[in-house]
Image (cartoon, rainbow, N blue to C red; front, side, top):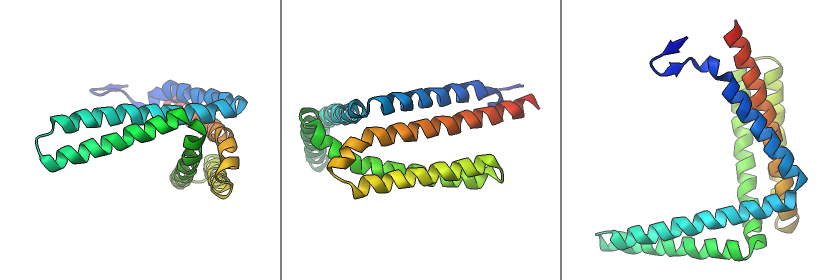
Length: 182
């Protein structure tokens, strides 16, 4: 069935399945190379901060208001400085990143709990509650082992979260396929 916006969302189960498989495979890679994963995440964020900082400084220089100009320039300069520090010393950046990932895992657990509530009774609800609980446990482990054991565990925890997210997404795709076939 097609609408003005395109195919019915239920018929897009293959894209959902592809996303689930991609998450799952990425999670396996992250688990196989947790040190690389941690360093890569830190360096990626460092580069994002560097580029964002440069863009913000440029916007500040082009800004017309004096207050806005200096606010943007100072914010951009701070982003450039932090980005360079993370790029130069990814371990220190990873220690800070471990705290942010702990918050992300906590948030992701909240999302899984909300999805479980919406899923209704059945195996999907139990799986989503389990994934949410695991994400919360991982978040607490990162918080309580910070800074350096958390840095070593960061890549492993991100890998576990991606694998579980991939499984949940593939299950959702399978359910969409069942609905589309009905």
